[in-house]
Amino acid sequence: MTLHIVSKSPYSSSALTDCASSCAEGDAIVLIEDAVYGAVETYPEITERAPVYCLQSDAEARGIVIGKNVEGIDETRWVTLCTEHNPIVSWFK
Amino acid sequence: MKFTLVIYGAPHASEGAATALRFARALLEAGHTLYRVFFYADGIHNGSALAAPPQDEQDLLGQWQQLQQAHQLDLVVCIAAAQRRGLLSESEATRLEKPAANLAEGFELAGLGQLAEATAASDRIVTFGG
Figure 1 (cartoon, one colour):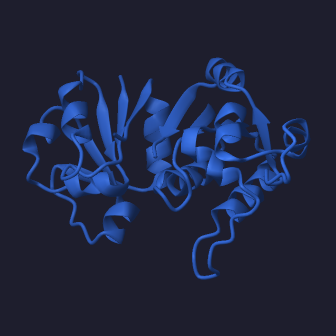
Figure 2: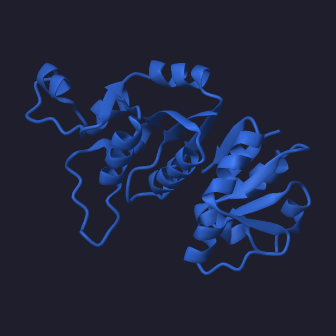
Figure 3: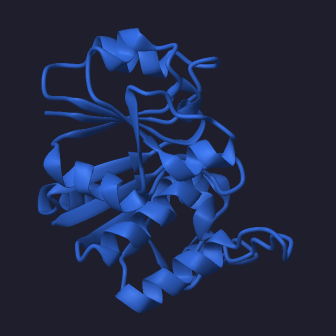
């Protein structure tokens, strides 16, 4: 069960869609930094594949309202998600 | 659980290093162990003692050093990536006959073997991109 960490905006990078297409059952996705722009409701094709979490502080810093299918988390919860999944894959290109 | 963090992002060029710092604090507060932080590629610039950001901006170097002192962290900078980008310890500056050294206190230069060893010794590896 992989934890995918995505850090690039879906408007400037294919990281989020690449990550979603490689998601297997039991995987989860965490959106951080500019990837929080993907945390809106307009991405059902991603939230249907895996549970999607979004770093609340990064969303607030950008004025993003997190969509209903995405769960806002703090850094502590992010660490916990890392302990619950292995390996951890970062998507930043 | 033992974590190792790998940082590719240079300070101020990407958020990676600042995010990694927040993640490091959170995992230490949760009682986990930070086995090693490995600064790679442009991430090596985090170890420059000469960084002088404006006072109203985040002082990443000072915060890494504070965390290093508080938790005796192993902050390792990739030596090959550092040499290419002009980040040298006193001994490397002498050996390469360069006019100055700029590796910050609390950081050390080492090879990729240290990353391989940390990968084997840690439960989780988390990479922070550039």
